[in-house]
Image (cartoon, rainbow, N blue to C red; front, top):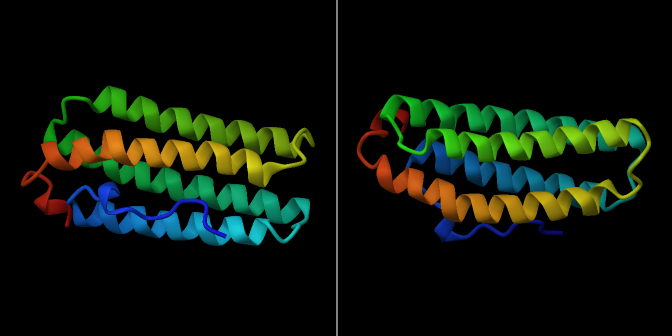
Length: 138
């Protein structure tokens, strides 16, 4: 099952970022498919932890590139990153407390919409404005 379909418009032109974006989309799709097979609570918790760790690491790369290049919308872009991480943390906390029975659908809705919009808006602009300056991050 595909949660997020890779689209060329998601590419930034920064090889390290694009590589991680593709890996992240593949991971999300793979793990979302696994969640569709009625996993137990521990498997869901592991899935959420893996998603959170991978996304956090990727955001650290993007934020370093933005700081290194003096990116003009760093605070806005980072705030969008923080918003997604907070949403995932909330889902993790609620799942741990037994408040969510349908984590896959909840997570899917948030991740799919967030990633598709973030890639198109924030990351596309990052790639365009850091063209040439991000060569060190290839």
